[in-house]
Image (cartoon, rainbow, N blue to C red; front, side, top):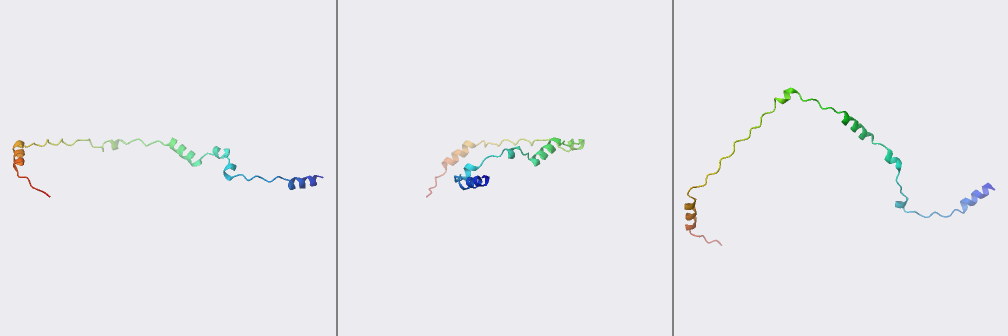
Length: 96
């Protein structure tokens, strides 16, 4: 009788409904739980890093900053009025 029921259950199974591939996807909680080994090693080395103290000989190698002298103020011609009058007196040139 058991063999007969097994055959019937296989023979009379309803057809599966096709599920779109996007609807069948699910998220795995196991992927979230895995740790990034490279990142863990990097963080461990970063926390253990101690910079070497600066040697006393390095401090004397830096020169003092000396700013260059300020440039001189340009001289304005004293006879500016005469130059403007001479410019106004020049004949106008016709250009095409």
